[in-house]
Amino acid sequence: MATRYLGFATVVLTASILVIGIYAQVECGGNIPSIISQCKRFVEKDGPKIPPSKPCCAALKGANVPCYCKYVTPSIESIISIDKALYVAKTCQLQNIPTDKCGSYVIHHPAPSMA
Image (cartoon, rainbow, N blue to C red):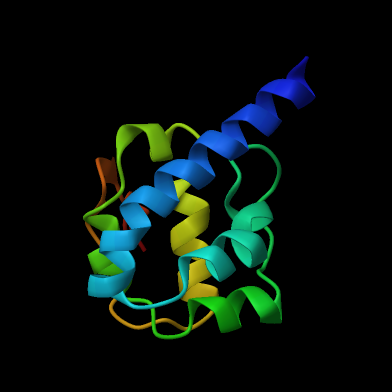
C-alpha cells in the first residue's frame, strides 16, 4: 500500500512540476524533465539526506534556485523535502541559494554557539 501511495505521489509531483515547470523553466532555467529524472531520489521526503549524483548536478546546471522557489506550492512541499532540495543545490554548487525561504518553507539556521 505504501509503495502504491509513493508511486501515486511521484506521478502527482511530476505532473505538478511539469505544469508549473513550463512556466518556471522558461523563467528559471534548467531542464525540468532531467531534474526530475536525475534528482528525484535525492529530494524525496523519506530517507536520509545523501549527496546528489553527478548526473543530478548536471541536470541542475543553469537552474536559478530562488526563481524556482517562487513556484514551490504546498502540494510540491508535501512530497519533496525542501531542506534536501536546498542541500542538493548547495552540494551541486549552484549560485544564489535562498537563505530565508523557499515556497512556504522557512530555512532554519543553527543558533550561534556561545564560546
